[in-house]
Length: 170
Length: 303
Image (tube, rainbow over all chains, first blue to last red; front, top):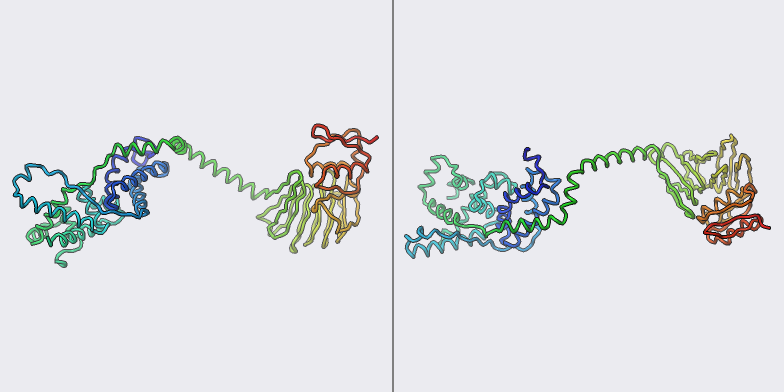
């Protein structure tokens, strides 16, 4: 059975689509709107819509269908919040060697980075975070957003320039 | 530093896509450390946690509401599509070949607009068929029952009936057909009538022509008298059988005929709005008694 033959209407195929894409989709919407609740509602609606149209959407196109639907839903929402991200728990022994001063500096730097990311233009932010957090390649990101790989690289480059410029004044 | 790199340089650096020379140059530059720090710090970031199992469950709950419907559709839509195509082909074939038909029920009248703006007013229990597609070349309608035509001037307009045809160029006239009955009344203009018995008549305003049970008759009528269109049916020397049918058509009643001669001729009219009055005006002069029984009307010779 080739992927094209799989019916999205079958529960196991639907679930595999969910497991493969739900989290990145949620993050993608979150990077845009900054609201976890809103992002998760949109993801839910997108999957419900996919199920309703399961006979019309072929398996191979389900991913781009989900991203398109979610993006359209996002565009229809008015309220946007600032993206807030967490830092992973530091591995204790890694920080133990550092001086308290250095730790404080690190913390300040991280806060500044957070704020600057939140203030990046939406297009740059989603590219930067999909790449750094979700570990998506430029090709995958290009597919998700629906722009060229070159376009993704340009956004990435710009995002880094902006981040350095803003944080550089620390 | 703006001109130092092209517009995807940093992206390519992150993807490890720089050539050795570019890489070396960048790693020796002052800003390299800044970028490295940004990336190292950014790579410790994570998105808010996402409860996947709970999210999937929520979606599955929503699915249950419409699961059966969707499943059925997905398995049989090909058949449905095929059926729709076949139906469409079938109907369009019927549409092209048999034309459009309008029918009226008991006691109803209907105005039918023909493609060129001409009108046909159908009396009760009548049907009219015409071909919309070939109308421009051939203004022909087929009539069963009774209709009043108001024809726009133009090419020949033909009414086909079982017992004869009526041809006009643009006029107003009434055609009545029935069991062995064919009657044409001209209200305006000029009408050519050809009966199946090969008799031809040219009618002008106020002229009437009929072939009833093989017998041809011509007479004049007053065009100002009320007609069935105003709620009153008129008859001239009409076999009683047809008058009873006309009563049935208007009032949706059933008659039971006991020893009465339906070949007798009736001249007069009846109203479409009052059954008792209609029965009295038709049957009293004919010396026939009528009684209601089980929603039927029994007709007997009056004693």
